[in-house]
Image (cartoon, one colour):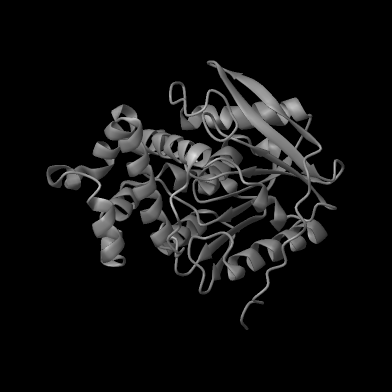
Length: 319
């Protein structure tokens, strides 16, 4: 069977609650709540690192059945200070998520996320088991050295023209250590140079995600893109503060929860083999390959799979 060409996305609900929550170290995280105040609580981790939350991703959830909570991770989106990388680490993001849960008076919630958001959802669920009722993961990122080698070199074989454009952002001598060079340039370069690098990185990411090239953003959108990749470079150059195999170890601690991995069969950002390893580590979990989909959460087949999984969970507490 082929998925419907029109995914079952719900009407985007307006927030009924939003604010800035102080979490220490001078950071304040922006959060919002949508949907039914008495619905199934769900925390939706955004990706990146650095991307910020998107209201569009709330459309996977039925607003009559879910209480949808989003927050912008430190330095991301509407969180303040914008683009701040000091005191910005993975362990602190997990603490922020639970501080938000307590602030909102939620005992247990479904946790969900895609890509880097799936990484955080796994780590959070493994650490805060008593606060979790289920885990939904799209396009999981294992944050291992092989993933970085793939993104910053290996994927060139699949997208040679896009790689040529991306690698040319750096001087020839720096191309064998492209991530390190990008991180330094995004931290120290002038405004025009940082914008050039952020747009080039975004173009490469879009190519791997199977998305068409887009016109460079302008003004505030361009400034946000620069901050996004400043944060992403900060995390990736520190291996996301995660040891080799740490995400898989966290997957092994998800036993007893309903856990569903959704992964695009054509994903070139977070390779399918990673999802297979994560599923094998998480005893009792389910893995659904989404045919024809890549890394794009809004690909019709992936959107259909997400919406269908959430309908099943709302009806039965299982995926």
